[in-house]
Structures are given as structure tokens and as C-alpha cells.
Amino acid sequence: MITIHYDPQFGQAIADGQATTYVDNTIYAHSDPDVTNVVRSVANASVIQEFRLRVLKDEIKPEEVRFEFRNQPITINEYAVLSDWPKGFADLDDRHTREIVTLAMKKRIADREKGKA
Image 1 (cartoon, rainbow, N blue to C red):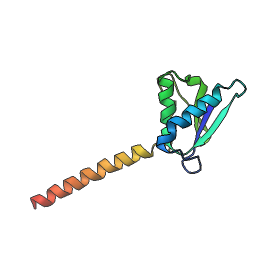
Image 2: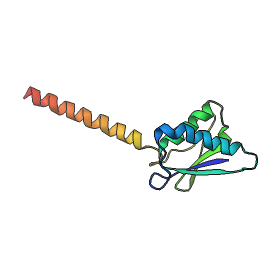
Image 3: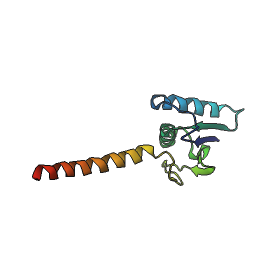
Image 4: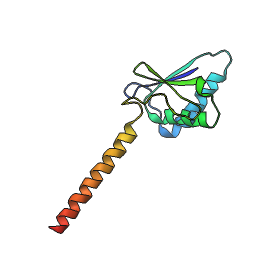
């Protein structure tokens, strides 16, 4: 079993460009017959997303990997769908994107209204 603890404050920060290699190495460690459990703690979502892709590519079975967040187990199915997506779990990019779009729309509306005045 591969267990990925997601801890955005104290987990290991893996550069986005290194996520593929990190997951390769983790899967390789898991393939050792003498190793029953591989546990990692990460601070960014790119590793989570890379594992989801590997499940979809059939490079690892969904029952061989799970995620944990705040002591809550999160499983993955064969379609890379997670059993739960609690607030704060690998969602920083989504929150930033929503805020950027919202603020950009408000700014555009304000600028248009200024032009009409």
C-alpha cells in the first residue's frame, strides 16, 4: 500500500516539475516484494494529481494507493475519483483560480462603469 499524507504546511514540498519522478520513485519502492507499505508526506497537489493519472493509465491499481488528510483516509477508484475532497485538501489552485476570475470580472465591470460616466 502506498499512503500519501497531504499536509500543506509540514509535508515535503515537491517541485511541480519533479512530481512525475517522485511518483515514479514511490511506485518503484512499492514494487519491492520486501516492502509492504510506502508512506510519504507531501505539501502540494501535483503529487496527488500525478497518482490519479497513474491510476487512469493502469500503472498502479487504485486499491494500492490512498491519501490521507487530517487523519482522514481518502480512497481512489479506477476512474481516479476520490472518495472525498475535504476543504483544504489539495485545493489551493482551485481557490486561487476562482478568486482571480471573480476579481477580474469585478474589475472589468468597474472599469466599464467608469468609462460610461
